[in-house]
Image (tube, rainbow, N blue to C red; front, side, top):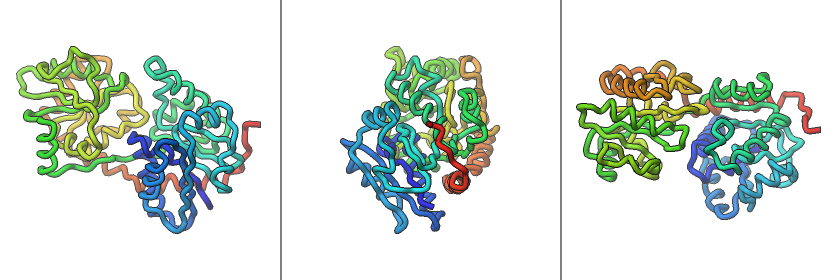
Length: 368
């Protein structure tokens, strides 16, 4: 079997990038039987794309194909016009695993990963071009993909609500991207960012991350405690400043994240919606207690190892923070047990099963 995988997204440093990188690295380790065509398009970052693909552990059964197609053009040609079959660019294969952005036409069986439905559920705060792209893409996924991979039962249910057939959807959990940092690394990172006090941490400032309510909750929970609130991302409100114990770090390079998470007394992840919630697993791996939401996929990811709170209730979040600070050992032990259930090797093994299942599926393109 020859499988083509779209890696166009790996140059952007997002959760989707990490997923694609980890999936392919582990597929190439565990699968010595099948052939892979790793392809992607970019214009300004074509060389970077080629370098990153070639850095994934290429084998003799791997072919790399890149082409100068920028994301906006890919959206127009493949999602909107739905022309130029992908095999014109990559040759004949048995299966195609498409990306998080473009859904090219093809007579070949397609598998697609849908990470979440953020663009649709939070359309008011998402750029219109992104909302439209995902609407167009989902239309073709529903018509043409023989199997759809999702990272949670919650996301599976979201797709079913949109009219996707349950029989095509497969839940394959993702895994942590960070491991616990040693003491020297934690000290290095704290010195780099001039962090002197104990702190809790949140990652991401997208509106759905619910940072405003988390800050209000922190201000309630910190009473009488010498503790700061470190937020990875740009400041979302000029009213929040260091004097109130809240500090926005802006962009933080990937190599500093494990140290920051490990050094925190707790991670607050009171998001309103997630496709899965990998930051929860990252904190578990870094032996940091987690406070997270009781909605969407967060309880599924946490698996009873985090404190669940109502993300719409400031008092609930504040109580969760206090509880995490008061019983860290219990939460750390539960987190380590939970995160052991997830691995990128397991993700690749289950994805390979879906490839085999799809390859044996009687396929009829529903576009006609």
